[in-house]
Amino acid sequence: MIYIQLFISFFQVGLFSIGGGYAALPLIQNQIVELHSWMTMGEFTDLITIAEMTPGPIAVNSATFVGIRIAGIGGALAATFGCIFPSLMIVTFLAFLYCHYKGSSLIQSVLFCLRPAVVALIFSAGLSIAQTALFAERELRLQNTDWTGAVIFLAAFVILRKRKCNPILIMALCGVSYLGINMLY
Picture 1 (tube, helix red, strand yellow):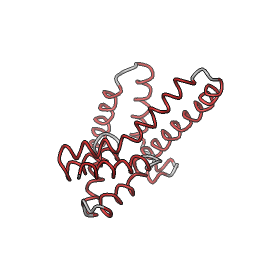
Picture 2 (tube, one colour):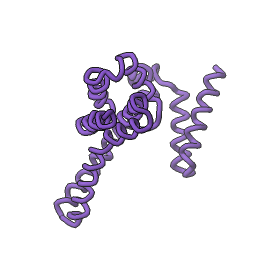
Picture 3 (cartoon, helix red, strand yellow):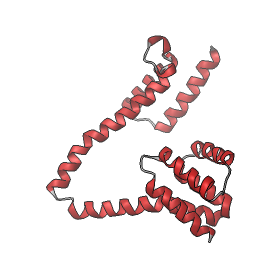
């Protein structure tokens, strides 16, 4: 019975959390703290901290952690599958539609128009991250600039574009470089 409750609770989270992982947090809180009392608010806060630190989507990580806490491995599987099942079904349906109608001029026109929007969204996210990483207090002023971070960013960008190096290696080298430079000062 607990497996079904976990599945249904996280199915609702997966179905209605439109807008990304952080949009799912109030839904997860409602399910596990308020409706089922599986955790206290303090435990929920700890859960979110751990879910943010681990790789993967925060909603899926939360589902896995809650499931394991409530009902062990079976609970983790039920909650995680409940969380991803709505997306799995929607994407499968959209893939079916695309495969069936991919030759349609209407579909091709829609996809052609979406490409610049997707690039703009990715570029906007990149600028937001760069602003957060390179400017203290997120204000675009020269006195707020993290020049060490800016130089390391530019060096990494050039190396990645010109040399086609492994990005994970470059990220590790950037982290070590930044740490080393800051230890000198």
